[in-house]
Image 1 (cartoon, rainbow, N blue to C red):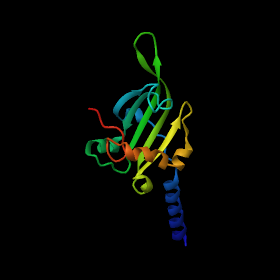
Image 2: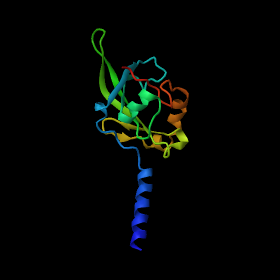
Image 3: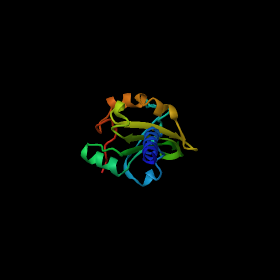
Image 4: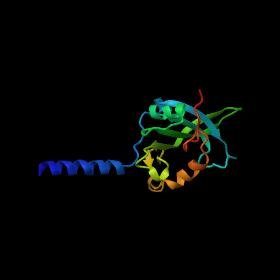
Length: 158
């Protein structure tokens, strides 16, 4: 009987882990820097995505950029900062607005091509829960606009 309860508890733990929200990617700025670009006020993505965009890849995502095959456990972070326009011609990165996160898990996110999506707002790192509850919203764009392959917008700049 004890074995039954241990097995049941382990199974429930696995189910709970499978339903857990995407974790905040601590230390992502130490990962591989994929690229940085900027969207100005005339961008169709403005005002939300106006500013500097830096993309970071963990080791498994780095492998995906190199091979075009994205393994489970790949995590990509899209870091969005404001663009500050000072005196003269300089435009510099300002405060962080939010980060978007893509996580590869082919079983958990089978309905969206194996990718899960979330967003963390600044300054408190609060999760935008409705993105995880409705990943098809993000996935709709990622299906159509993926020059990096397999729903990934970016390509590694070396």
